[in-house]
Picture 1 (tube, one colour):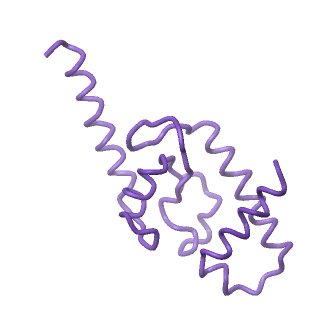
Picture 2 (cartoon, rainbow, N blue to C red):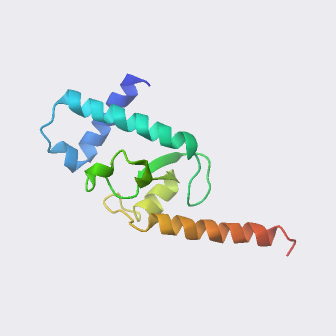
Length: 127
C-alpha cells in the first residue's frame, strides 16, 4: 500500500468528517485507523468489484450501509459494506446529498437487480 495515498486519504476524510475533526486522538492513532480502513476496504473490493445497484464495473466505491461516524463499531465490518459506482454512491447511497444516508440501500439494490435481470431476460427473447 502506498503510504502517501493513505495519508492523503486520512487528511481528506479528517477535513470533511466532523466526527473526526473534533476528536483529540493522536495523529499516529488516526493514521493507523486509516491504514486499517484501507486494508479492509481493499479486501472487500477485491471480491465485490461491481456496483450492486447498476452493475457498473468501473468507478467502484465501498459504501458503508450504516455510516461509521454514527455506528463506529461497524466501520470495519464488511457486512456493513456495499459496492456502488460513483454516480450510484451519490444518488442512491446518499440521496444526492453527502450529508444524508440511505438506510434502505440494500433493499434498493436488490430490487434494482431484480428489475434489471427481468429486462435482460425479456429483452433476450426477441420481444
